[in-house]
Length: 218
Image (tube, rainbow, N blue to C red):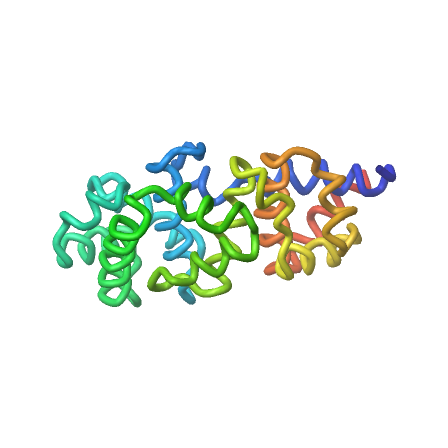
């Protein structure tokens, strides 16, 4: 690793290396509950709404007991709307409440509530996993990327998942814009997830890019 890249990486992860799952209080592991919570978070993050609001709404859903597909299904539509509202997820609350209920039913019916079964149905293939994820209401290609960026911390089958948004952020910082070299900088799947989240954050903010560059130059 070049010294310049090393300094940029250290500054980037120090300031922005928080996964969205971690921010939402999800203790990510290769188990049904945290994987489902990540799917819910990816659904919320897919809307044209701030990441902070999506994370806050996820926390409210989980605190209300809707962190499993069974819990989500057993909640009434109004219960889900109310939880989203407490997280200030109001612009899309009614539609999202419907999508979350329908998605939980799909997961229970097709994969017995366990996203590991979806992964296994896809043979661990990253692209096929992404395609299956888009069968959930509210999860399009963007949502699938969000899920895969975070889940690579516990699903080595999909690592490295470094999509266009991640590579755009890398380019703005002068880091490699190719998946292979960028993945080598991060190393483990857990660090890849942190790096991916950090690069998505800075890709949206010139101020953050300048801050990281300045810190790396010290």
